[in-house]
Image (tube, rainbow, N blue to C red; front, side, top):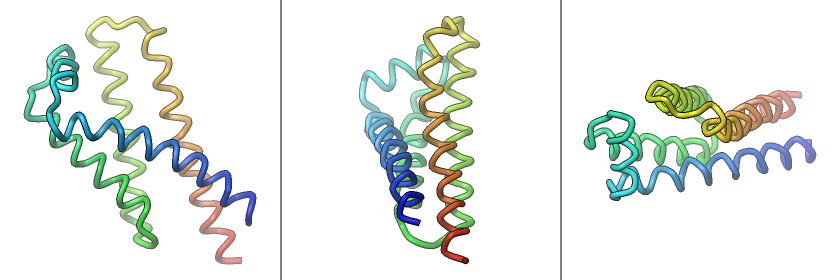
Length: 124
């Protein structure tokens, strides 16, 4: 159980740091974040909405319990990252430039898998 917890928290802390740090510029509609949204063809008003959603997701993952909400948060993180990847490719960004997004997907998958391993280990 200890090994599962350690691996879970490594994946999860890295994931939540990435999502949380990415949420702040969006939430505050910082110029750099708005420039990215404009480059992707999205309206500026979408930025604080996505920032708030990411920040609420980070909080939901950290709060014990609420398994159904956590499932939705993991799904939301996948939707967010998939949308960002697709949007970047749709405007002509080179595939090599979006490959680092695979790290985000790996963090989501790792955290999700070990979240379920922790739940299963607690039931035994």
